Image (tube, one colour):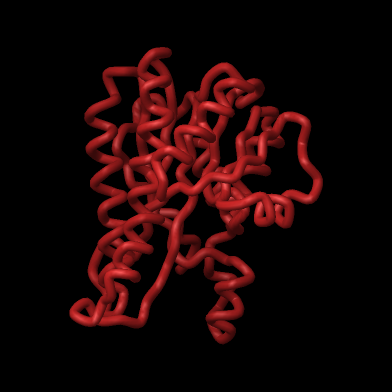
Length: 233
């Protein structure tokens, strides 16, 4: 389905990012895997694919995102799909105790990254009259939660950004949607929650397939959706 598609994936070295990269690579796409530094990318992808680019990019810096996408376009000609997978999670502080450092970290990684990558990618999609953008919100963003206020606020912002982009871009032939994962079955989450029932969590590979659907031709009529992907949790 995605043979010869040009795909950019942020947060590529993370557990979900790796699964999304592998999904599109297995589909025959040209994939640009972006993460903070080459060390992370080398550890995540020890065997580089000939149809892949593996680029360091500071998603919190607009110039870094622009430079990475310029590299991708120089190699691939254009970008068909943008998957904003990168994100971060912190909890523990009550809202009134939240530090500037925590606020800036979560909003930079979870929302500013989407703004910066969209600024670099969307104009080219508009010029071509086609494109797919998928963002990652969270099931937790549907309501506030004690000691998770800033995190849930950032992911709720992702949902609002997705809806706004969808309304702005749907007449340009561009679909913008987001997913809302529950607890993802990753090694880190298993360490952090050893007593949980891991069989009820959602696997990264299953999320990757949902992202693939949103990036495929069957999703042509879907704009601004927030799709729950929470397994049995």
